[in-house]
Length: 312
Image (cartoon, rainbow, N blue to C red; front, side, top):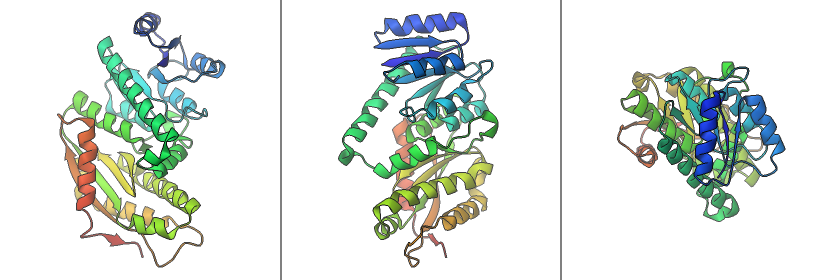
């Protein structure tokens, strides 16, 4: 792995460099600040495979640095692991919305760090396989959505809320880390466009990607005031982690999603085919693996349909 670790604490920065090099990673660099990190990235011809970023740094926080990294071509999806000494759910959520892939709370064991880096390595291998062999990818349209969202992230922490579209892997990691650090189960709302296949069939090839991107943006924006963490599963299915379990009894989400779905229109689209959506819920358990979460999401999506609502 080619790794850049950004940490303003001199002693920890040194330890990170020594440890990572001892693990026989291909290339390891360290930086003392966000500005130094951006300079290193610019001057390094072969891209890094993974970043370790301290959240709390002077002048430029780790969260701000994420947003700059995500704007650099080729770095839209490179795993970013946050190192934070603050066990604060709001700060952690903002890091994920900004584009973090995972996080570790200080102090941590280096074995835990290497485990997360290995997870990032596996994720990179899978992602590269999908890009080089798109016929094996479960969803090319999901890549289009995530690429669009990655390049339109807010540039400052002040503009970030807990809502925002994150990658599927980051969504799984977010739920697992929140449960391990703060305890309790997590309620996930599953938003599914029931006639997504029919909609896609009615569009031209460019319109298919365009519609999915517009739908993702509209739903993400509509749910921002609700303090959610949102991901796109593919095939018209979204999942939102609810920080407030009581929200599932509130009609505000139904209304927000209905308005968002109805707002997405494409020029020359068939007016007779309107999107039909439904919302279901599942509860994740604190002993689940990350894949268990998405299995539960898929199961909830399959159970939807009996009370679907057409957008007229």
